[in-house]
Length: 173
Image 1 (cartoon, one colour):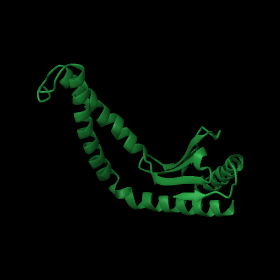
Image 2: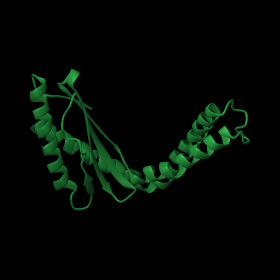
Image 3: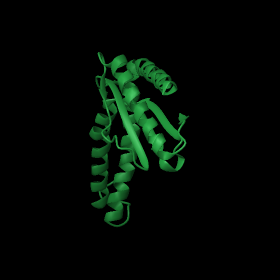
């Protein structure tokens, strides 16, 4: 979503964004504070290209993320993106994709089958890591879909609730 700010210059836009972030975090804490954990971004100083992320999670399998993006060159636009953000996805990437990449790089660099056809040493290591990294991502996305199947509806409802709060807060600013 792209929201058009009422600001006429960059400094006014920054102030309007600060008000929006404060109102949004307050509303999210009031709406979700009891049963969800809300993690706020650390970079509150608005620079030429600014990104801020708020994560709302309940355990490892339920969660959403609100990303706010603003650029000085188009100061009247604030981009807001609400997406699924679960911890289980990060765990799977660290547990599957990275080990696949390391093993593939090792196999490619040392000309171990089935990656013994790759040329050179460094190039073979990089290509081996890339090839097995892609396979790891495919496996990770499949496992994530299977693991989160029961929680898909709850994640979608959480995203809708957060999206409605975002819409309501921005209209009030």
